[in-house]
Length: 311
Ligand code: BDR
Ligand code: CA
Image (tube, rainbow, N blue to C red; front, side):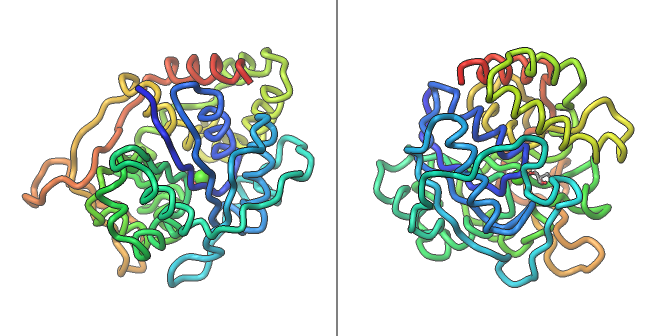
């Protein structure tokens, strides 16, 4: 099956690897990349997104900048995971191609409304600010999208930035609440799934052994990005979150899924940004999302390695 996608992102090493996986895959047409503030501020995420498309030899893909802060809260960043630049671990040159001058939210609206209904999939890998702004500008995109496949949330795994919340939802919970309630066909990849996809030494070595410019950058990013989570979780490697969104389009059979009702906590200071999943259907609420709760990690890394070899 083929997919035309927009990637909304805050690169971030795992975001960068997700973008490369999409660009390496013939089943996927990347219509554009929209950057948002998240792992690092917007000035860095938009430049990093351009660095990554250029690393893949795809300077033709438009990169737009969007929100420089969440809808109503101050920005929280994660340099402690991703480094000062957001892409520490590989030295990429400054981008040569200019930033597309459209605002990310306008780009999303124009692209979705300008193409046939049901043909564009939105892939958010970051706080959902740009997506919420696009929905506010043009609510009809919700029913016009083929779907939204996003990385965010956590259920049994607990949070990675507070005990209750995963980073992407925590940074802009008001935006996330709007997105989960928008009526689009939503699939989400929470920490329960991403914490199964670890960048073990053997998996990183297999990518490094490809010995291309792209593979060396990816292996460098993995080495850098995993050190924080290895120390935190005591694992061999860290979770490679965002590329699972792209893998879900390419190889849905790698995942186990369940339709669930999800609500986002926006009020409680203790559990702000928690994705409350009605796993057992105790509320009687109609499911509003498909949760990918498990992944065949070896299958995923085999796919990633095979695709990266094409770049
Ligand atoms: C998410 O937060 C970011 O640090 C990663 O890029 C990923 O999108 C994981 O919680
Ligand atoms: Ca991200």
